[in-house]
Length: 139
Picture 1 (cartoon, rainbow, N blue to C red):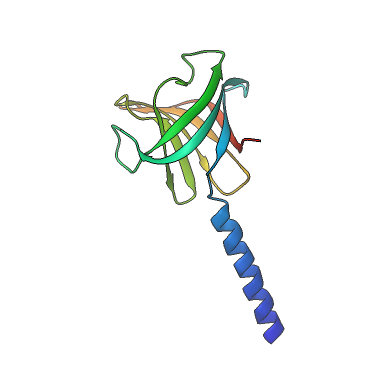
Picture 2: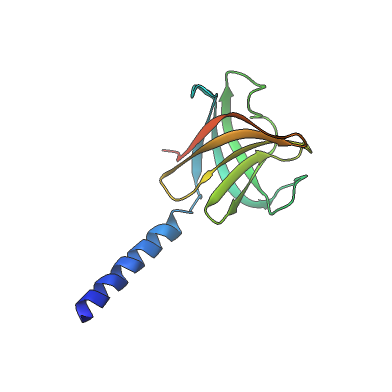
């Protein structure tokens, strides 16, 4: 019985440490933004900072520093606009939040080596899907 409890404790500790580290977004990351057909339109190298970001929408937003960016369509994703991010629980949201009521968001779950999710517009008229994104640690 003692060894069973010890095994459960070890497994719980391993799970907890894996879960805690899976929210680590330090370092440089590669962000690929895709159109609805899953073709990459924009690729950015980014760093998550602790600097408070300006935002028209509520919540605690921090600056997402763009280190480099390439795009095939400058109007598809705002690679040259200020970007910010927030983490709520295991949900990562990256967005253009300084243009009030014309937000462009990337949103997906943290917890794996990479983050995949949806790209959409959010405004007074509701939401509209624009594509997808993939975020992975830069090599």
